[in-house]
Length: 489
Image (cartoon, rainbow, N blue to C red; front, side, top):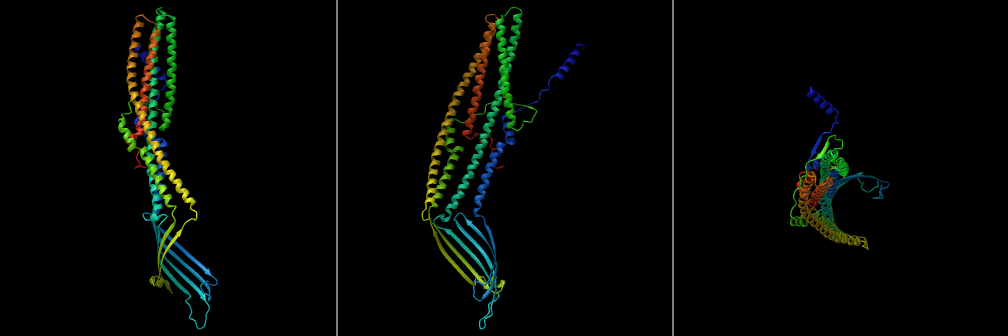
């Protein structure tokens, strides 16, 4: 009977208890993978790269083969070609191909055209009459070659080189943006872990003080403790409750933020991070500094910016030269009474033309100013590269200094925590023996809490430093190479 009542009471309590949402543990890799799938920031960086990629493709297509075509229709009253022609009508077409060869700057055009001319003439005795219709057909081959300004396609080639460098720059920026995003996600996840660690820490503290409070209250009833002891432990109990609520507030805020970041804000399950583990190791400072100065994305970006400005300066310098263009044209043609003969007889007549065309502004101030501006931008880019590398070296060196001291501090924290735990044990022992008051036990509890907080603060500060070192050394690009790749874009 008693057992049945106990079971019924347990069922009633279970049914009356509020339903707790299920918990789902998420690892750091799962968190990053889910955010990459759902967060728009990742897609924005990919779209920026695609814009640069398509812009380069557009620029590189300057050498594509072009189809050209035209049609002609004219009427004249009277004809401007002859005094004796009262009316003339001309109909024609031309089709051809045109291509620019960027390697040499040579423009080649091959075109075929035909004109049909119909005229009306007055009859004049003693003179032969002209045909009412005549056909002329030709094939024109023209070659244009710059010799000074844009000599052998220099400006064209430099423009294409700038476009290619800009695409390379966009690819590096894509990798850097993705690495920044992963570092940001790692920081968010570590904050999430820290707030859960704090909640668990204060919850355990509260349970321990609550058990002490219960003991002191019993002792007070038996006259074994003073009123001051009871007030002190009640005050401490309220203080720990306040700390727990503060930790819960921070943790709920961070949990909501985490759900938003990974696109799971509508998920009813309670998401929790896994147990804290270190973010791995970093290379020795000498290796990291050598990589930064030789192969890092920071160095590659600075070098590309210098190359782009150097190429732009060379292009602007060439634009200050006079234009000197060699034009060669061959024009085999025919003249016949019918269309078929005009095609078969192409080449009966031939025209060949070779010309040199030169021009230059009387005052070349605009081109000279653009050249001088490009020179200053080139020199500025070289100085900026030096500054970027200097600041990066200072930053990386400072991170390794911080890491060295944080490692030392972590060892000191662990020893400090051991001492705080031992002190609490001894204070409790003395209190149980009646050799001190609860005040000293509570003070030891506070010191232990501070020691635990200091250790956690050092741990997570160390993780933040490691996160930044990984950014400087592009380790995230290696660790997540299957994710941050342009092949799938």
